[in-house]
Length: 451
Image 1 (cartoon, rainbow, N blue to C red):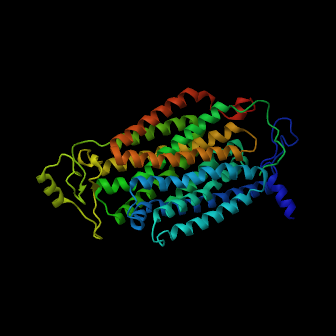
Image 2 (cartoon, one colour; image 1 turned 30 degrees about the vertical axis):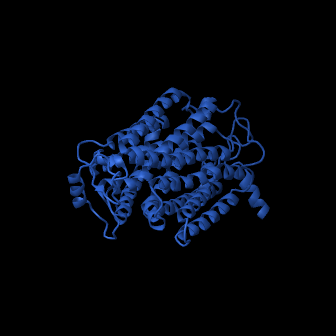
Image 3 (cartoon, rainbow, N blue to C red; image 1 turned 90 degrees about the vertical axis):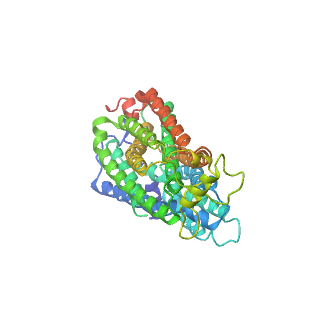
């Protein structure tokens, strides 16, 4: 029985349904249909639970890091958040290749075990007497390594669904991940495919597009807590609570968008939705740019003669008088060490919430359309390795995004940080326009069906 189970796991997920194969034209049995959708729904649950764990942690990382190690600054926060994606980037191609040649449950079980151990380590990083921030760095890296199983999940769903079902299935995966934010191998024989190679230009371009999409969201979720603490003088507890509510609302919005995408993609197509999503994201970050003349409340602490550039004695006294503080004694407001706090206008709460709404529309659209286009570009062949590379590109984005935003934001402020993001998105829209006509399904390119 075990041998039969292993053999069935290694069979092509939908069989060799290609022109000329012996299974072409065979109607799927009701039993097989129920079996594959049972497996897909279990993977939906896996993605949901993984996202619940991620959402519980992400908003509290900055306050937790400050509490366990006073030497940690906002720049180190970027590295801590990036370590998750570094682990995922390394693991995704490995798990994807593993799932191509072995039963898929093996990489899934191993990755889940690693995630459990890593989260236990994260829970106790406050125990060592010193170097706590580095223990947190290692713990988040291991959590990310365990999260590399997403490549296996996406490859299975892509292979276990028809071309018509794929947009809906990818949207369901993304919806399960968004819902998590609210609550805190194939055969070793080659599959017969139609004559013709995969369009490698389209494949590489889709990886680049996916990289930018994940880069944008990674930097947004990284900077949200420091940004709100600086702009609105929120305490650590307030930042965790309010930003958690913002992300929860973003998750609800994303679910609605994912459900709408299922219907809309049938009318306008995946490419148009991807393009529209990028335009909306660009508008969201443009609105997030600081405007006006009102400055944020400045946090004055550990004053030194050379630490306050071009500030009069009267301005210091007034700022100290008005400076807010945390009930626990920790100062609140924009740190004076960040020189831009003294001249950069505040980002009003209405700006932030409007930006969140737009990003909440654009990011889900871009994310699910990237998955869908990518799986359709690859055609009816084992996709484990390719999905591993797609996940790795997303992980690379989640490494560079937090590092970029933490460094640029700390040194130059939100105006430079978000202006450069707008520039990145405009370049990405231009790239999409150049390769727009090449982003078509494998079966469409080779004449099996019409788009």
